[in-house]
Length: 312
Image (cartoon, rainbow, N blue to C red; front, top):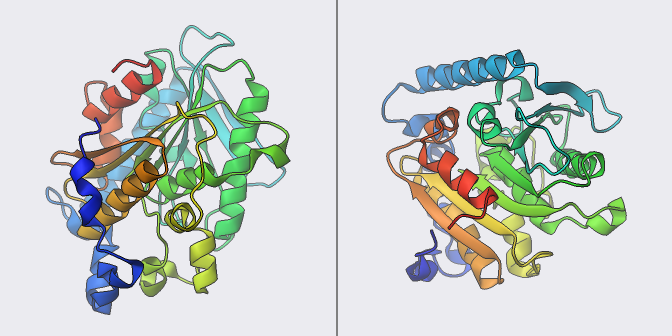
C-alpha cells in the first residue's frame, strides 16, 4: 500500500508556492466544490443518491436491533452517537468510529452508517458520531466534540481491541485533528490503532477564500489552528503509538486540490515518522468513495478490514 516514495516533489515547493494561491476565485470555488467533479451523475443527482444510500444503509443497520442509538457522549443536545455491534459481542471488539462530512455545515449521523453492514459482519463494532455543525457549532467546538466522543468510547469499552478513526471530507479533517490531541488532560489515552482519512481537507486556508467558508473561518489564525497539515508541518508531532497505521485516500475523480491536500498530508506524516500509506482509489468520485463502503468487496472496505485484522 505504500509505494509512494517518489511523491516528495509534488507538494509545490514552499508554502508561498501553494498552487491554490495562483487560482482565480472562480477556479478555487470550483476546486472546492466536490459535486462539480462527479463523472457519472449530475451534481444534484449525485448528492441525492449519496443521501439516499446513506439513509437506506442506516435504516438497515438500525433494523438489526444490535445497536445503541442516540447515546450521549457529552452534555450538549447534539453530542450523541450510535453504536452498531456485530452478532458476537465481546468485551474485546475492535471499534471503527466514523465522522461524517458536509463541509462542517451539514450531514448527520442518522444517514451515515454506510459501512456498518460489511464491518459488523466481520466482527467490528461501528460508532457513528454526531457533532454540532455550523452555524450552531464552531470548528473548535467540533474538534472538542470529536475528541470527547473518542474518550467516551475508550471509557465505555476499555477492553477494546483497538479504536480506528474514519472520516470523510470534513469528517476526515476532524479525524486528522485527533493526530494532534492531548489525551492526558482527558484522563484516558484511547487505544488508537488506525486512521482512515477519506477525501479530506487538511489545510483550511484555501477554504477561507470560498463560499463554502460561510463565516466558519474568520481569520488566518482560525484556519491554522484547525489545520492538521499546518500543525504537523510547523511542529512535527510524534506518533503516540508507532504501530498506529494511517491511510490517506482520495478518489480518482476528486478535484486536483483534494488530491493535493491528501498527498501533502501523506508526505508530511511520512517525514514525521508515522506509519502512513496513500491510496488513490480507481474510478470513484468524492461521494462514491464513501457510499461504496456499503459493499463488502469494495477495495476500501477490504483495506479497512485488513488493517483492523493486521493482514498485510
